Length: 256
Image 1 (cartoon, one colour):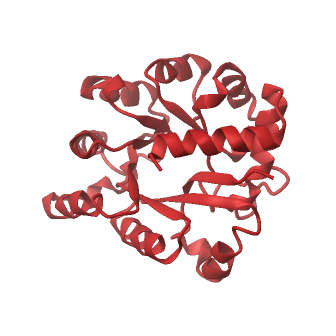
Image 2: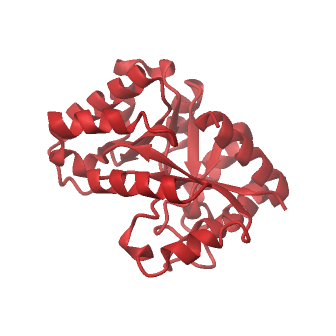
Image 3: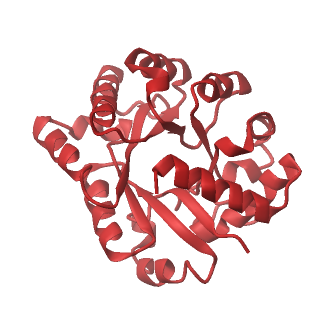
């Protein structure tokens, strides 16, 4: 069987505190070959660096999620910049806009989104975008900052085929996970049907968004086989082919 590449995970989350080590140590047996653990807060970024040092198949992304941008200042921003130079850090992220929770003022979100995009340009690194209920503003900021100049994945893609087209036309990837298997995932099924297979990155966003038949439970990278099967059903491929394609996609995107 092909190997799973989980392009977006949060193994630093509290949900894994009791069994993190045994779980990550069992991944190879479950055909998971590579995981990118994604920072969301400053603490999450620190924990991500520790995970990359401890587990050979774990790489890291460093960035501050829009909800947490209110904790940023020039000192912590300098630290982010230095952390991006670490050996197993492969991307800037997750960064973007989130108007669903609206915990952080939108102008603060936008300011640090732009600053982190500048970091990505300066370091010449790919970017993981978080965008929730902020479709137009996210696209506007990205285009104003240089659009096609960046290599990006729109993580946990949740918008329409039209919005997918705008990102795909810039050469971006879309992160596809457990939502694809949900009964109410029709919009995402349409996007996967429309998009080319070589632009799909498999992702868990674990511990969240476990696929059917584990919906509502804690998610982990081994469960991505269910997402691969659903992509295969939509695309007329078998799960093996999907794993091979998405493995190669992630290696290209993260330059591994």
